Image (tube, one colour):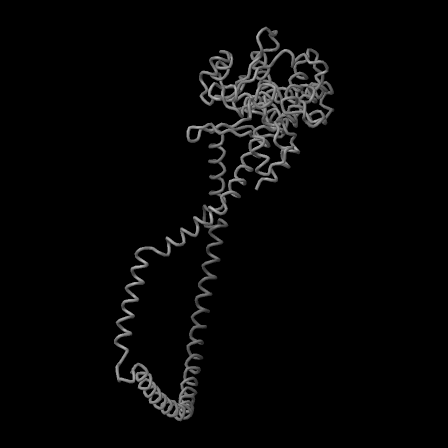
Length: 453
């Protein structure tokens, strides 16, 4: 059976790493499988990096252990199971894009090899070992999922030069093709309870036959269930209409009686209301007239308050002055004195808090630098980035041994060179001295980042 692998992709991978990298423009870092990894004694994890927590292998360690177990010359079923566990652990811990695709490929091939073992055991038992068939179907689904999940545009991995033919990309592609033709063949879909894809013509014929039978059975003829159902519904609807008309007539007669009683009661209510409201209205009118006379007298008294002993009325002068005050208020608002004063207050407040804000900013930058960029999890990437020519003179870059290149910041100000030690600067900002060193352990890095203001 033809393998489910794009031929263009196989040609691209067989063309060599240089051609593949020329076609991809995302500048992904490649991965080369080395002989030291495949021939490691006992396929044990490498020794932990200095400063790292003991017993905690990295994602790369787990990947290399899985590669070593899979490439053993006499690979056993236990080797394949251990390789799958190691590759799953590597992907769980987090791998870069290219090693991630390699781990997925080898995991899928390992599960495909396991599926072949279970199918062989099932056949050797003459179909009696049902558990082997169950295991075959389960592992087959895992192999299918891994091989379908590979992003071939990120598959920039290769084997080192000089390795035997069994340790090449060609060998892995041949194994993948054999897997698709063997364990992943659609012939086993029914064996595992899966439904194979039906051709479009077969689906169309099946649908037409089913639709035709349904129409003949339920809709054709006067005795079909659908026709009888509509007849019953029509009779029921006609009966409901007759009952509704009779009910409406009864409601109309009852409403006429209620309306007549309401009109009689309304006339009695209005007579009683007018009898009670007449005196209340008269008393209210008298009170309003008395209050109006009092208010008029008050206005005359209030007007006399603005007359001086010389009988000079001050109200026009007050009115004139109020106009000047309104103009002055408009002028102040037009010149934005209030906004200017508020801005001045904000500026004074910022100047008063400038030192504290500067210390907080330096504290944040120092924690990001030491606790994130130079932590154990990212130091290798930082060293690799510092190898670029543009960062050759950067005093904060890391050397290959993991130490800071210089650590002294220099700034030219007013013709003079000002310099400050990065460690002293961070400690003055409040960062603990224990956090101002490269290669922090994960626990220490998390504690350092948790204290960020």
